[in-house]
Image (cartoon, rainbow, N blue to C red):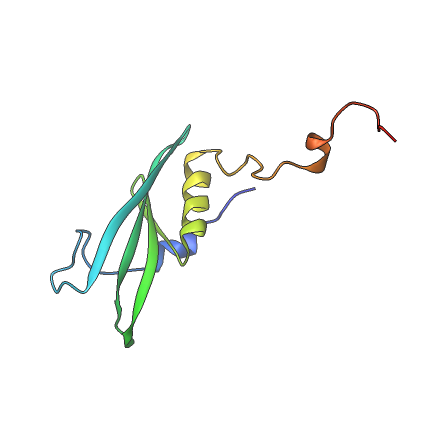
Length: 110
């Protein structure tokens, strides 16, 4: 099981890597870092005016891992990519316990 981040490496914002580009149109904000046995990744959000539709805001997410950059359309997808790249297992744990785990071991009182 794994994410193939290859195609994402060529997509995404093409402007500078600072917090705000030289024209001030797109802003990059740090969201969170992920650490695991394979290293550390950082998750950033890019937000600004969509050049194709100036009245709308465009938001994309960037994961920086080692020397690669991977882009996603949602924060959840970017977080999963970061976890898979680093080996961080926070999304491998079930959030909602399964019914088998929540049943008591006592006999049915009926």
